[in-house]
Every structure is written in C-alpha cells, then in structure tokens.
Image 1 (spheres, rainbow, N blue to C red):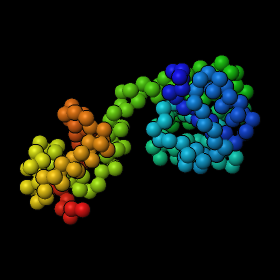
Image 2 (cartoon, helix red, strand yellow):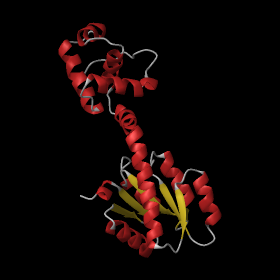
Image 3 (cartoon, rainbow, N blue to C red):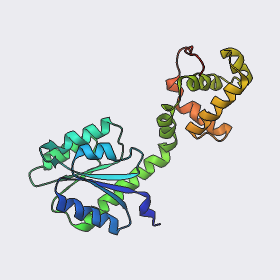
Image 4 (cartoon, rainbow, N blue to C red):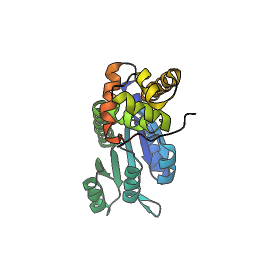
Length: 216
C-alpha cells in the first residue's frame, strides 16, 4: 500500500471525459479515487470521514458548483475542495476560495499542476485530521449514545463510580456497567486518559440537568 492510498480524491464533474481523466491521473499516483457526475450523488455517496480532497467543477449542469460546495460544507464535509473553472469563471472561482475552497485551477489543466494541487490539498487535510481528528471523532460518535447512555456518561464525567451512579439513578450496578461498556465502545475509550479526553471535547454538550428516563 502506497502512502497516497490513505487519501481519497473525489472528482465531481458532469464532463465525463474530464472526470475520467482526472480519476485516472490521481489513481496513477496511488490515490484512491471516486467519481461523481453531480453534487447530489457526491453528497449521498461520499463518506464524511474520508481523508483526502475533492475536485469540483464550478458548473455542474444547471447547478452552480459554488452552491454545491457550500451545501457540502453545511452537511459536514470538511475535506479541502479544489474548484475547477473554465474560461470566464475565474471571478467565481476566486469567490469560492474566499468562501473556504482550498484553491482553484483553470481548464485546461496540465497534469503536473493538478497533481501538485491534489498533493497540497491532501497534505492539508491530513494535518487537520492529525491535529483535530480525535476531537472530531468524539463529537461525531457522541451522537450515537442513547438517552440512558448519555445520562450515565454525564455522571461518569462528574467522577461518580458505577455504584454511586446505580444508587443515583435507582438502577442495578450491572446495568451501569453494561452501559459504561457500550459508551466506551462507541467513543473508542480504552483508558482513563481516553475518557478524560472525551470528557474535555464533549463538555459543551453537557446538559444543565440530567433528564430522567426509564431504563430499557
């Protein structure tokens, strides 16, 4: 496995010839690749946690690539996006960069220029994921906790033992232990240090008061 295979390059372009050429070029340099003819397919099919970058044309049929880029951001896609512009779209491409796109390239594109842009975008996303990936994972997986698990989680964050939580919630010690194991699995907590990190990164979600729920 080459180092580049860790990264996924997505190409969103309704021009099949360009899309296939860009996918071939990225694949020839060892990148994993996925191609989409429109933004809807991309938004439905591309994993949110993929590390890499996206090449997005500024014109996707009758749809604006800039609007598609903003919609992707609203849906949680944080990978760097390289906007692909045709002649006459440069002003819009620059606007896209000002609104958060990683960079832009004008067609026709020389292979080496495109590869350098992909390398820079993937390196930038890799750096972000290395720095903030754990925090992002905690926040993303936090939404998987059930109401009962959340209630027990916040009591654990307060430093209560399983026995104290069982008494506080009027449930069995075994029930608390079972939920604690489920919480650890969902948040990938394997040590006290991991739990402290999770508690720190999810502290903003803490309720003012734990809700009372019936045990299931």
